[in-house]
Amino acid sequence: MSRQDVLILPVALAELKKFMSELPLLSTETIWAILREEIDDSTVNRLVWHCLGYDFDETIGQWDATRVPEDWREAYPEPPDFIEDRPPSVKLTRSIPPQNKQLLKEKLGFNGYKIGEFGPRQTRRRLRPTGY
Image (cartoon, rainbow, N blue to C red; front, side, top):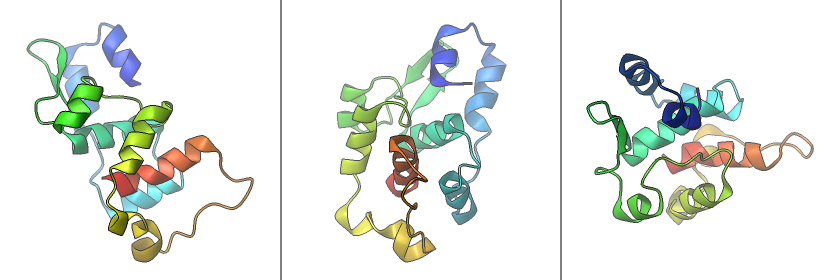
């Protein structure tokens, strides 16, 4: 289920609550699973949304961005697709403090992808764990 499905399809509230609540713990194993593409894009997006503070308010059927930092809330009142859409991905990448930009390499030993193994989508996925 993608963010667009949540906003367009008449999804039962219990289903939506389950959609947002069944996230894997943000751990070293989860980060490796993201890098190896063992976790789907929808779940990666939901992890970022959760970390940024986006919540779905079941009572009114809309996204609640009150816990989202102001600059994000103004630019994206509803959670963006960080995998498919370049602008929010760039904003997230630029928000990573310089001292954290090499954490995947320094803490996990991730040396990146080999030429031919990746494209823009993989690059955006790789940067999501650093942005948490």
